[in-house]
Amino acid sequence: MESGGALAGLHRNPTCHHHYHLLRPPRTAVNNLLSSSSSTDKRHFSPLTLKFQKQSHFASYSCNCSIDDGSTFQVAYSASAPPEFANIDWDNLGFGVMPTDYMYNMKCTQDGNFSKGELQRFGNIELSPASGILNYGQGLFEGLKAYKRHDGNILLFRPEENALRMKMGAERICMPSPSVEQFVEAVKATVLANERWIPPPDKGSLYIRPLLMGSGAILGVAPAPEYTFLIYVSPVGNYFKEGMAPINLVIETEMHRATPGGTGGVKTIGNYAAVLKAQSVAKAKGFSDVLYLDSVNKRYLEEVSSCNVFIVKGNLIATPAIKGTILPGITRKSIIDVALSQGFQVEERQVSVDELLGADEVFCTGTAVVVSPVGSITHLGKRVSYGSDGVGRVSKQLYSTLTSLQMGLATDNMNWTVELK
Picture 1 (cartoon, rainbow, N blue to C red):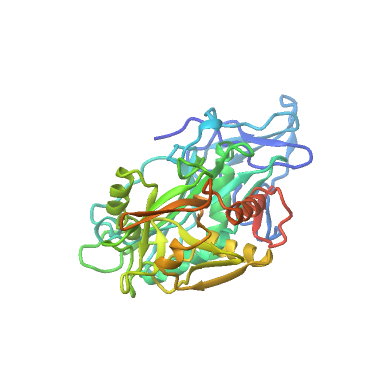
Picture 2: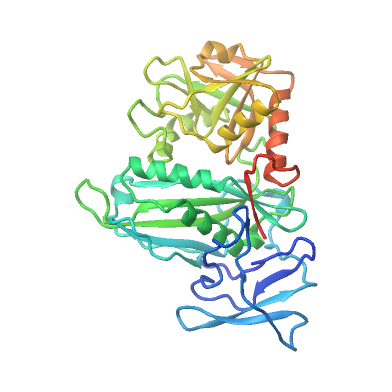
């Protein structure tokens, strides 16, 4: 399915609020514009390095560019044009797929050499019925977000961490993976190509979904002969319908998300199919999601379906240690660092159900939810509530600090954000 919108906002100057847009979007991409940015500062990205020539019929600057298929398009710069946003209801964004303008595609053979990636119009892709992803689940995904600042600039949050996590996961399930530089540059290109879909400040974020899959045909159980790295994006609001309001979890005692020696510690697609049964049952009973226990002792916390979990007791914050069955969340890692910087004692270790039920407050972390306070936990029919309104002081404090960094509202002393200019 193609979106008819033009590729808008390829480059913005924060002080002048300049605006770039394509007057005619190309059939394949703007790859000649979105080439390597190795000469730019590590924390800033400005893909347009072209020289612009003034043309009389624009109250602006423009240039003619060509792409591989021989067609041409024009990039125009206007000092007066306001930012262009997609025509959607920004005040009522949920968390779901909204088709945008462009996606990124890059191929790789078994030798690990990725071809030059390209932007393509968002739409369906072709896969062999015998592809490794469809037959044997050989696939990974990542998730990160882009935010629009009030000055018009765009911020990414720790994209290199997602790249490193994808490399770790790819090694576990025998796939080649893009380099950190390839991953980050592809994310930047995809975000800039879909700039008009980034929600205005304080209205949400652009969710970025990189995928790595065995796209080549394979009949026997073996690594696929070809791989595809794909990125698409979608504007999103809150993951849980409750927003920052507390969620209600139920502890699952029969089914398990992961086992020692398995793939619970990497972001393989099969991990998420495994939680759907228990999650569906829980939601039918009115719960927000499921909290899983370890599969050996069945008494230590692991994680929620797609989030890491933390408990708070006084000045102590504890979270289950990463030991192969729990995903090493990037938001989890960031919250630990923020909490330590604010004087909290943080422990990564086994956390028992008894500790959970006796905690002062509980919260979950993840890319989609950021920080989500837990209002109640139900275990074996017994419900324990946290606080009068379910939103604890520590949860609020950490949420505020982290989101201020992500959105560019606070000075980034951690050097976590990447600014796209």
